Amino acid sequence: MDLTFVVVIFLIGFVGSYISGMLGIGGSIIKYPMLLYIPSLFGLAAFSAHEVSGISAVQVFFATIGGVWAYRKGGYLNKSLIIYMGGAILLGSFIGSFGSRLMSESGINLVYGILAVIAAVMMFIPKKNIDDIPFDQVTFNKWIAASLAFIVGIGSGIVGAAGAFLLVPIMLVVLKIPTRMTIASSLAITFISSIGATIGKLTTGQVDYYPAAIMIVASLIAAPLGAMAGKKINTKILQVILAILIAVTAIKIWIDIL
Image 1 (cartoon, rainbow, N blue to C red):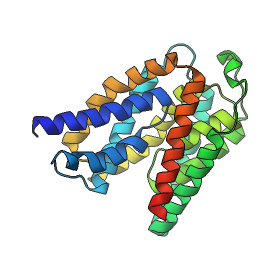
Image 2 (cartoon, rainbow, N blue to C red; image 1 turned 30 degrees about the vertical axis):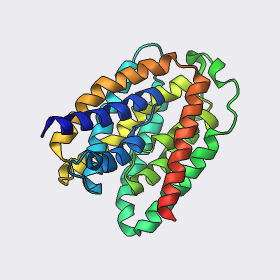
Image 3 (tube, rainbow, N blue to C red; image 1 turned 180 degrees about the vertical axis):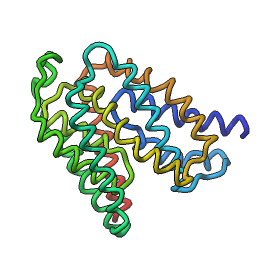
Image 4 (cartoon, helix red, strand yellow; image 1 turned 90 degrees about the vertical axis):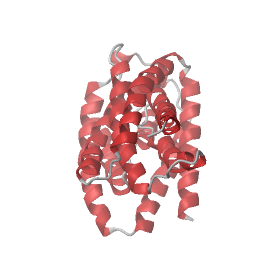
């Protein structure tokens, strides 16, 4: 590995993980295309799609740990929400990952595209007064939370993603969870949902360990920094950034499908 390779991979991991910590998403939305296209621009060896998905899975695992650690104080993590939605999304992702073998590639992409559009539309629905609720007074319907997380888990398991960009609008719009609690708790839920993907990629030999190690170091540095920034930024601005990011993701997915 030469210095250029180390620097490029580190910066990709740093940028993606910073955004991950700040917005409560796994970050693979950003890192996947960056890993796929940026190294070749610098004359470095291009990664295959399988290598990129393997590196991303491991990196999301560590980025979410870093983000959750930064949010561990201040009441940002809703343990009940994490248990119900985390357990449901983990079960759903296992079912989805097994079921994906029975689906065509176009069918898998279509599922992902539909879920992405729903998430994008939800992010632009006005979210009034949710950030006025004190963290210790937050309530939600546990069965609706678990059911929706289970559905997201099936979809994310089918397409091999953590599904955080789908969880965030559900938590904001349907469950009425305050923005900062949504971001912190969604990182914890994404960590749970990434466990299966990480184990699967490692055991099937889809992880290139050297770039993965660089990305992990970048994640552990950048995710807590992003989380600290997320605590300070106005919640309306955070919602707008999330909405734009999810909308761009939905557009990209449908361009790939069509």
